[in-house]
Image (cartoon, rainbow, N blue to C red; front, top):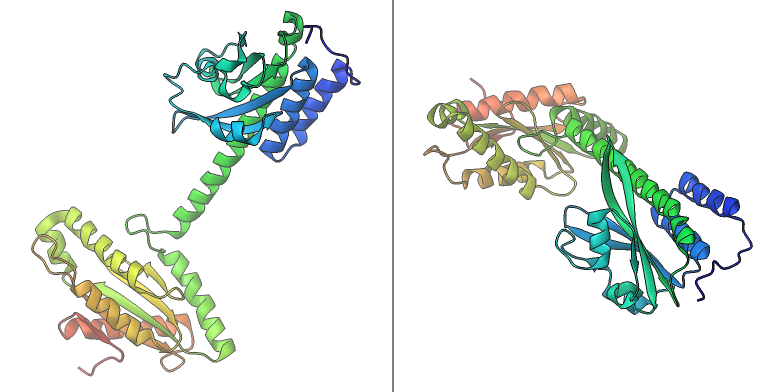
Length: 343
């Protein structure tokens, strides 16, 4: 290249309008970055280019999109590790947040097929603080373009930074929404479903069992002597017991079953099909095999109710299962009772 700005069919106004549109209308980050990288290459007459995004958790730059770079080079330079200390020009620009003109593109791994290179930071400002989100690297077959032409590429890098920031905000919003949704349906101590969730599951499973004429069982489990465990070891011991029981429940049920924390020291199993009693007994045995907590053995009393024999509504089934659970506890615990025993 001569260093002169090449002639293009689009005017500067058209080119930057296309860049703004790529950010404003682009729902896919890679597509938006690819469009911006292509426009920057067109504006400067670059023969290759790449955009990297910062991964702050790993202290790395991750390759997002390329232009004019062969697959093997992209694979070899897919990440820049240890950005905070690396001597790689891409890492240096990420740290400095200042553009860098590179007279020998061999120093920029992904642009080694070019003669010279320009590296532009992707920077946004939050509450007056500049934050690096990545870099845009452009390679040239000859000398670098004139300074005024190079300066004109910086707004394209700024738009790329805006695109990355928007994608991060959307991703964070989605993750936060997912987290809040999970929080609303999960017991924070045990990680099992909570009462709200299992009430809904039970309602749906009873309705399904009624429509299809298939059996359904529910079982209520209560940790035996839970008050004594807490008295001996405090809340920490009580929480440990709850978590251990929850782990056995989660690991031992079938994929079709639902287990949840039902009350303070109570858990519930919703088991479609005819084998609810078998599943409940397996859970009771598994819990009995747990190691003691502060010298106190862990066991549970379980009461089970079956649809439609014991009830046809969730409330009816819960009442029967609760009564049966109390019968199991009165009989010494560590067992499943399917029907209330006579006093």
